[in-house]
Length: 117
Ligand code: HEM
Image (cartoon, rainbow, N blue to C red; front, top):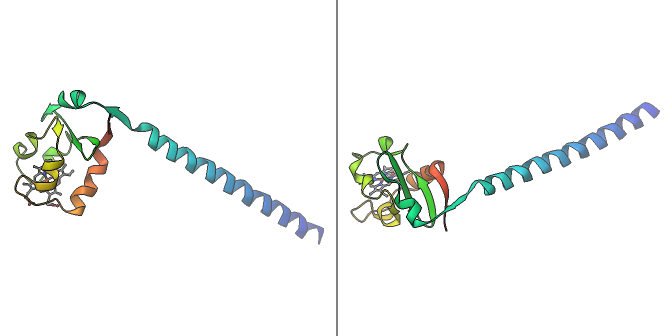
């Protein structure tokens, strides 16, 4: 009987310990993800206006699409004109009045580097 009580005691406190540990780890992960977002000015974004380094501002967030442009389903020139600029209009209209798909909007997350100051 004593053994069972002892085992239950250990099991209880180790599960509490695990919960506390997992809680602190995920809180840490969240604050790290938030901490990574830098702020940039439009002037800084404007320095990256080529296919060799292409940043854009879309709805207040700053993206580095340099690595994405070769994967975009158009010749690079289509995105090139929006490099270094506020490009919400480009994203919302594709240059001819039609918004990108939700899947395309979802892809952007991988290229997020910060927020506009
Ligand atoms: C901001 C400048 C951009 C312009 C002017 C632009 C323009 C276009 C054009 C003309 C097409 C092909 C025609 C069509 O599908 O209707 C297209 C398709 C596509 N673009 Fe862009 N694009 C831009 C940025 C982006 C970005 C930043 C992403 C994602 C990171 C992206 C992802 C896609 C995808 C996935 C497609 C396939 C169709 C869809 O899902 O909507 N584009 N874009």
